[in-house]
Picture 1 (tube, rainbow, N blue to C red):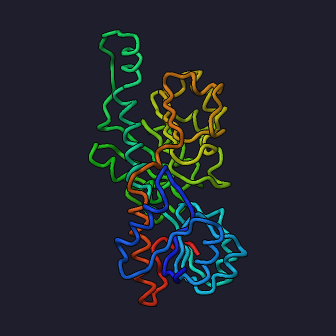
Picture 2: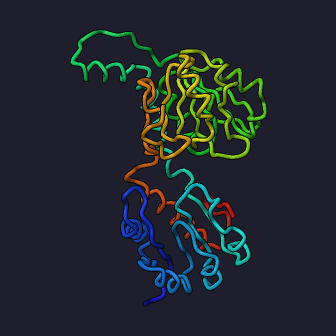
Picture 3: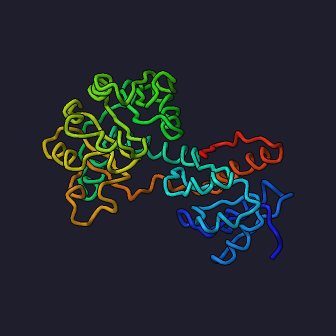
Amino acid sequence: MSEPDIVVLRQKIHGLSAEAYAEELRKRLPERTVALARTPEEERELLASAQVATGFTIPEDVIETAADLDLFACVFAGTGHLPIEAFESKEIAVTNASGVHGPNIAEQVVGSILYFTRRFHVAERQQRESHWQSYQTFELEGSTVSIIGLGAIGRAIAERLEPFGVETIGVRYTPEKGGPTDEVVGFDDEQGVHDAFARSDYIVVACPLTDTTRNFIDANAFKSMEPDTVLINIGRGPVVDTDALLATLRNNGIRGAALDVTDPEPLPSDHDLWNFENVLITPHNSGHTPKYWERMADIIAENVHKLDEGEEDFRNRVA
């Protein structure tokens, strides 16, 4: 087996094959040898001489034998599963997939907002019943949308909402950095956060799960929301207290919820959340996009060129 420059490790994401990923890399880096590992043994053999590797992770014992590896490109945005210390001990830079999901998840959020604004769930029910009757709807223009988390996905959501003429409030760890929203408050600003909840027609959870964000949307948060508020969660299920959400829905405390992530997940078939007409549930589907490998290949191609120039400020570097 010839020595490759780049190794694509065994993986499948959203039904997309690793071979398709390798092809996207070859298109962008025609002067480079891109190899696809199909077995654990091939992974170990190819990693022994490759300069760049990309995939879910690399076992620590294999990292020890990857003598020439300079860069590992993780295909997930989250890197908590990686043996970061092992990479650092071998001076291997690590990058993630931040930004890859921005367009498709932002589209899911906009679609979810419009679903409730135009009350398509009412139309669906009436269609099932073959019942023709006009019903009241809402209008998005002039609404207020709070976005919890202003990372790459949160920023993409704010950008796509701008043409709709809405006011936006962002919640982030470092509010002094500002953001693409009209206002920004900090996670630790309890008064500012609850003020945002109270003013919002739509609240979008777009943050990762941390000690700070676990149960961030709890019973106290729901008390601050107006009955016409809609909650949208495309972040992580445990950011929302499920028991508090159920209690709020049963008491008509909010207008509805669009949940791409849940707690627990997968959602059991007998769970009460399935029974609400005003709850839209998708099976952690917002991350699906046919352009996943294209965007990942763009990141890697940019970083390979930086590697050639001796630069270390790689795009999406996390270690």
